[in-house]
Image (tube, rainbow, N blue to C red; front, side, top):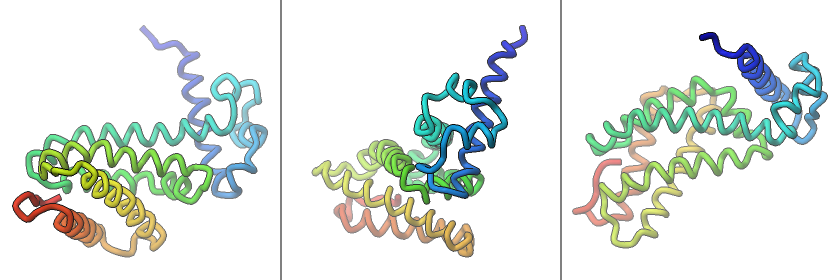
Length: 200
């Protein structure tokens, strides 16, 4: 049975609005973007916009949620291998490639103060996925240390990625991965007893 053409039109409308929002966010701050700006850019009427979103903030949130959902699915795919080898490399490499593939969107969201919720959600994603790994690999006696480690690494990796993009990815990918690995290893080594350390 063919899918409802109304569903296809709705998906197309939402896609156009998200693309238009990202394009407009290259030109002006998010707070200056109106629904009229979006509908003009997407070549649709305001009524169509309000069929899908209540305002521009909800549209921005939808853009962020789409990206985070794809990222979580990617992490899920590689988590078993990560646990098995005792290193975050199996998941960090594809995550880095994902970020490169979505570099333009990430750069726009990183640069937008109104999208600060995206950075917080990204940090939370790293924390939630990393917590079971830290518990399994290190068995920390004080759970607060695990939180410190995960928050430090999450914001560190986000900053590392932002800087890499700002530098137009001048550092070779392999060197960036190696640097991230050394940073995470060094941080873990400073928090946990030698007998409990494992390569992150």
